[in-house]
Image: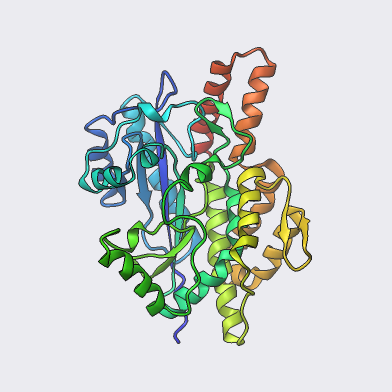
Length: 376
């Protein structure tokens, strides 16, 4: 079995806000997408709702290359938005927008999805980021997917950016997951012994007319239908670019670490979904604040301890990819807090200084606009 190339690509979904009201726009200016497409040549697409726009990096051989490309994409979309009196935020929910006011993008695929899923998909005023890592061999891709499920809650905890929903603090660090889980075919991936077995299961749904193809399987990590990649989808979008790059680098290194185990005829232990789902919930609820369960110890362990274990496990891989600094940036995220922490802190600080709720929520939007462009 040839070694995977482990090339990487990152997709991010941004929310578009009116620069004056700070609310989400309901209708995209007709010239905005055209201007983005002209500047970005196939690296930008509309999303289900008109208040969203998605970008994707090129296939990148290094984390540095991915960072540079993603920085260019962020700057370009933000510049076009600014020309249209808008601002762009990288957050998985908007602090106060109401989902019922949003308008769907007029596109046949989205029409079909709305007809099929109805109110469930209309509530989907959420954004995420997806990281693709190339694993060209089909069966190896499935094998690594089976093992990678363990680390998904750890990645979610490090990326949280959706504490607010329709104007109030939900008490969750990732409310996006709560909204997303109303969709079918989401959550942790199934376990399969081979790519053939996976494909046979997909074919049952396709032949029954339930889905057109595997693109409508939206697991937290999945084999991409379009590319020979293993695509992680559990993460909130990180507001700061360097946090996105950190999470992407960690995921890439984790897959290579699992591959190295395979070369030694070893593997990461598979845990029952009921256990991994407990950590998924803890990451959704608390982010990095209250720790995750160490299944071997049978105890909740502080996230900082788990992070150091992860960094030790992937040290050789980070050195191989030349991304030690990017991976170890996770310590800074932990120390300063994720976007979710910063949003709640900004909101509470504004209230403590005499702002009313509306003013405090707008202060959160202003912080998100600024942090989205941080380091670019």
